[in-house]
Length: 443
Image (cartoon, rainbow, N blue to C red; front, side):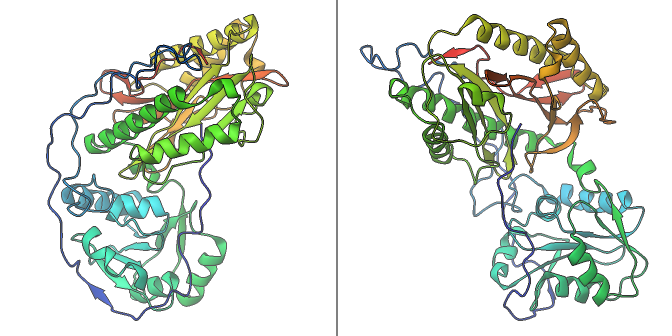
C-alpha cells in the first residue's frame, strides 16, 4: 500500500517557446541488449562481532535474481521508459484506438503518455488520430528531449502557448468524436479544449489506457524486478546501519531509507515511505513524525523504488526488542492471511476471491473487523494501477498482471501489522517477486 508522492499538474499552461509544427524525431537509440546476470548481495554488510547495537538484527537473505535485460545506457535508450520496443509501441497505439471504439484519442495522463510514446517529460499530451501519425504535443523545454525519447511513428509538435493550444492546433481537422481519459483530464481543461474546438464532441472513457497497461511485457516485469531489488537492498542496508539503541524517530528512519533508495539506484521515489512506530503503526497511511521507536514498539515500514519508470511497493513490520504475545499473534495472523492470498492468486482467479480469502482467514481469528482496506492493487508505471484486489472488484487476474498482496490488521491505540509483496501472474500460477523475509524482525 502506498501514498503517491504529490506532484504538480503534468500539463502546464503558457509554456514559452515558438511553434515548430509537426516534425519527425531527430534520432533513435539502439535496442535493448542482453547483459550478464546481475546479482543482489547475498546478505547485508557484515556487522562487527562486538557491535552491540545491531547484534539482534538477523542477516536478511536476498537470493541471486534471474538474468534480465537492461538498456545499454541512458543515452542509448529506445524511448523514455527504457523498456518499450518500437514494434510494441506501434501495437499499443493501434490497441488504444480500438479500445476507444475506433475513435481518435487524446491521452493526457503522464504515465499513459510515457507508456505509449516513451516521453518522460512533465508536460505533454499525445494525440492519436484515426488517420495519420500520432502527435506528441509538448513545449519548448522538451524540444531536444523528445528527439531521443520519441520514435517513429510518433511525430512531435512544440507548442507556443501551452499544451491545450497545441492539441487544438493538431486536432483542428479531426473528424468524429475524440475519446479521452476520464480520470486524467480536468473539468477546466475540458472546457478550454471545447472552447477552442467547439464543433468536436469529447467522449470520456474510464480506464482507457489502464486496461492495456495491466498486462506487462517481459521487459516491463524485469524493470519491476529491478525496482524490487533496489528497494530490498536499501531496506537491508537501513536495518544494519541505523542506531536502533538510540531510539531513532520515524522521520529519521524515513530520511535514511529515502537516501538508501536513491543511493541504490532508484529514480524519483514512487511515494514517500510510510514509517509508523508503536500505536501509530495502526494508521495504515501514517506520515512520519518525530515519534521515536522505543523498546517494545512495533514498527511498520512501507517503501518502494522506481527503476526505468516502473515501481515496486513493499511493506514489512518489525519490533524493537522482544515482542509481546499480542504482537507476535497479530503478526502471525497477518502472515497467515498474506500466505493464503499469495497461494490464491493466479490466472483466471477473480480478484474479489483473493480478498475474500484474506477476510475469511481473519474471520477465523475473529479479527476481520480490523482490516479495512483492499488486499492489493496493480503496479507498473504508477504505484497504483489495475487490477484491484478488493471486495468490490470486477477484475479477473490474467498472465502479465503484477499486483501487490498486502493484508493488514490495525488495533487502534495499540499498533498494526502489514506484510506486502509484489507478485507476477503467469500462465500456470504466480511468482512472488519480493524476497525479503516475512518474519517479525527484532531490532
